[in-house]
Image (cartoon, rainbow, N blue to C red; front, top):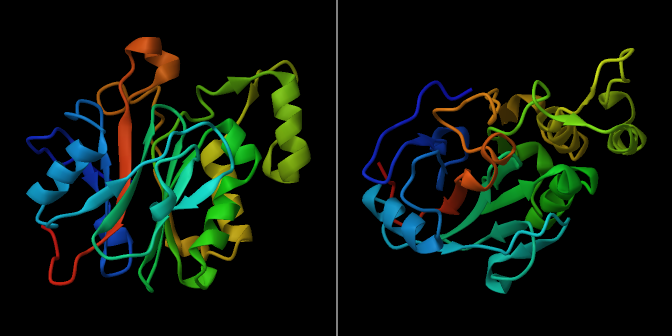
Length: 239
């Protein structure tokens, strides 16, 4: 877990760059940021010393669709970037923000809610990156944890059918719960990533009131967090 947020004129954020291969930068903009639009994030990245970066977005629809940056914007839930000076961003407020990068200069930002997790969008993103999976690094950010994510029996059973023993059976009269972080980590491992190169955030968005946006907690008043990953322009190293 990233220990503490960094403060900036754009609001609090986690600097995730050190988790990824050289030439890749990554951030998670937390609750209280000044905006999650591509333009706002481009300004944030410029302030961080990354130079002129083009930030790509998709219209998130809880799908399993993965697209290349040149095909965005469109309806999808993951973006792959392959060119220096480009970045991908997804926004979340309980769903899974997943960032992946390879040493060969390829990176992906993935939005995985329960539908995206069930349809295994993480596996599709690995395939679209097209690098040796054992060399990839991944970050699973804050999301609604099993402490707060209670689902009905039908949804729980659908995940049991898809993920098998990775989804524990219901215990007695206890409510059905899902751990989307663990399930996405299992998809990454099944896809070939080394467990030691998967970094999982332990914060639950619903519990972390001060840091995280949560739709389940705050409804329509909830803001959005932005997960962004990109490739440095040659000669830029950020700060």
